[in-house]
Length: 179
Image 1 (cartoon, helix red, strand yellow):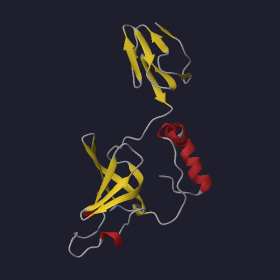
Image 2: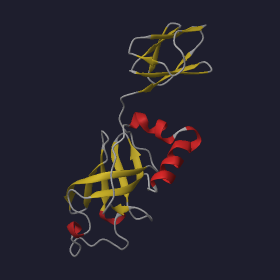
Image 3: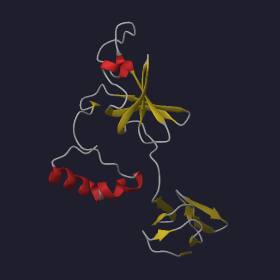
Image 4: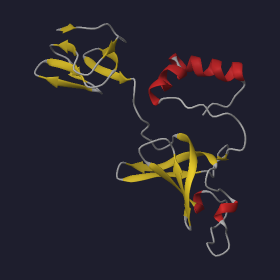
């Protein structure tokens, strides 16, 4: 059993990472007893598991995630929201109002309009259907002020830091709400 890189070293697709009794983790593949990189990223060895933390990746929603999105479309039942993912999300009118939705009376453009930014929560998602959002919970809804900073999904673990140390320091020093 041998490894060919140090932990957290940058590797490229096709690089031989390990040989022997290892298991292939995310972004790696195994041919015989050899494990190779599938993506550009940082190699991680955890026991017998060999994986790659990809440097270029995209956001895949999970139920419970807080997201910031932009309203890109509106119809009689709700809004389509770009959450910077391969999937466009849906925000139904009933998940935005604190009362029953009446299509004959309610003008959705008075609540949210195309181009508006929202903070929302993913309440349902699987890879066969687009994510479903809600803004009914406290702290969610239309974003009216502030600064939005786009961060690559691959950089999120670095921003959070070990045991949340980096994100805590950023919140404290900037006195900002970081979502």
